[in-house]
Length: 609
Ligand code: CDP
Ligand code: MG
Image (tube, rainbow, N blue to C red):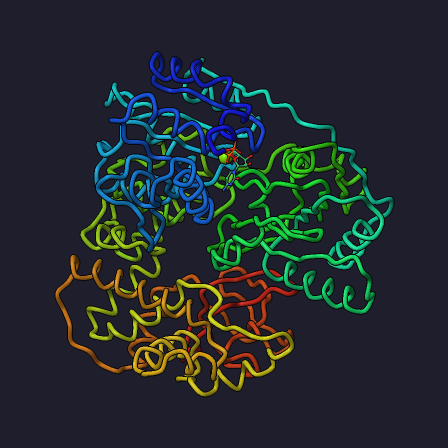
């Protein structure tokens, strides 16, 4: 069955040609429609042709790495983690027998830090290169260099069919394979007038499709957890009221969702299914049975304002290339339809491609990694698109302030230690400093729990209990300390399940946090032996405030909001913070997010700026 399935994929026709091309070239490019079989088949073809080769396949997202490893294991009838495995941050599912490893771009960069020759692998596949994440751009640069040193190494770049020439020029290769796949036409409809609220018009469009159109599943593109949950709630509500015979199954798909819930989006349903997804369903993941696509026209991107030291999650219009990709999801099995919740004029004005991430985000962590890999002059490193010089200098200086680099921009021992931790530089700095000050348990608990998503679990409509629950654990006007306390109480309690139930906490999330803590502890053991513990909240705040030196804000009474110290931008404390109903004068925060308002998430009060 599965073998037959594999042979029917469009890429199967190209199998021998690609194997030959890999033999004859050091760098090859494979481009093709989503779903044609690139990611799942190419690694297997290589293995079937020569079972001695060790292959790494990178993905921009954890979920994709995990599901693809699982899918390939199923096709090869092996147990996940044996022949085929995955390796993502805080979750390594490989063994000594693993020959095909799916890993995130970030994890492969970490391997570069340990072994600059990457001798563990014979073939490296950079997948989804068109997404142009900072990590995959950096990997291309590193591999371009490495190819000159390791003549036997093979590099394969895979992407959707966009900007192929640009990649080919940069990697200096002519070995390009474009996989033609039979796709069906997709009729595209735009709304005639500009929509005020895409959540509302998303719900209406889905229901209209459901009640008037023949069978076929619906894929709806939204921007993130918040609007996905909103649409889901309203849909369920309206379905209940309409009391129609025709049932609709509502599934969700976004990165922060627990894997078992994500899996539900792929399952066949008895009734019509609508999958509410982020751009994760654009290219890296294929859901069978989709005939209708609804596209809200927006995407959440990380963005950074030059000269200002904050990364923000912004809502941005999609690019034309993304809009086409989204529409294409409807035409895989038969003729499909795509409904765009924006006008034709808006479409015409969209940018052709999204600005690559490396030109719009904070590069602090990448620059530290480049230094740790041994790149002397990061300003002149050959990347496919060069970031702004001024921004890179600002980041270099920030690393000097953290003492990760000396005044000549050489990596210090502290910088080396920081880069060995799988955390953002601010948090590596914080953890190491906290150990030195003897507040390691507090710091470890705090950092570990901040690495996991969906800490709370609320039944619909019961979210107002949140502040009550938080107040039970509250310490010193600080989300960082309060969350550390939640993890500690969880660890101490005997009956963990009922503890979670009582406090609307997510048992799985806390288990995950414990595992993260253990792993961070192991990393820290390699850096320092210190192990005396103080319970000093003031010290904690002082070290945290120093580590988050570019994330300070103060209350501005005339605006009734917080002003970010770096930019003077206005923001509000997130409703899930212990400080939500208070107005402390000075705060530090982990991140700025933009949803309905600009929010500061994970906030701690401090005495002075
Ligand atoms: O990488 P590309 O988009 O070219 O395709 P792929 O991820 O290799 O997927 C090839 C086919 O395998 C898809 O069209 C799906 O039908 C199937 N597949 C699946 O059923 N379950 C998965 N987790 C991944 C792929
Ligand atoms: Mg793929």
